[in-house]
Each structure stands twice: as structure tokens, then as C-alpha cells.
Image (tube, rainbow, N blue to C red; front, top):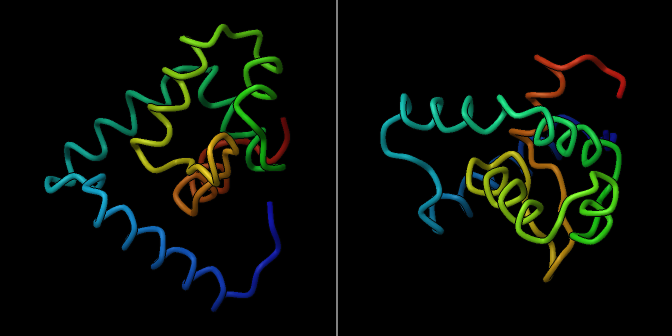
Length: 113
């Protein structure tokens, strides 16, 4: 994962949550937010996508090829991860891990792929 100072991490988290609020992606009910996150991360493909994005940014095509997915499968997995705020998009087709995704990897998943 990217090395950042504590201040940089806090700023990045605040920016991500403010953006999510503006876009209406944060659920009003925290229980619903947790349920959506659990549904999303129950799938091993999505967890592996998250792990890979914890190492580097990747394009739609790179992720599709890495996980042997067709366009529809890749879009489904990536949209779920974006909607639950574990990953975000930069530009048209580059995906990056968010602070929420980083926290999941740090607290739940093993440190290696």
C-alpha cells in the first residue's frame, strides 16, 4: 500500500467520504452500509481485486485480463466495489483502492496475496 503520513491519510479519508456523501453513495443507515459491504466482500473475486488494487492502480482491461472476466462480469464486480466505497475510479477506466478498502486489507485480509 501507498506510504503516507497520518495527516495525509486523514485528509484522503475526509475527501473520500465528502465525495461519497455528495454522490449519494453513503447509506443513511449504517447497518445497511455494513450489509452491502459484507455482500460485496463475500465474493473471492472481489476480495482478490481489492488485494491487487492495494498493490497498484489498474485499468478495467488489466483487471478483466488478470481475473479472466468478460466485460459484464468485470463491470459487475467493479461496480459493486465502487458502490460500497472499497475502490474508486480515476478517469474513465483506472481503478484505485480507497481508504475503506485499505482499512479492510489492513484489518481483515492477510498482508500478502
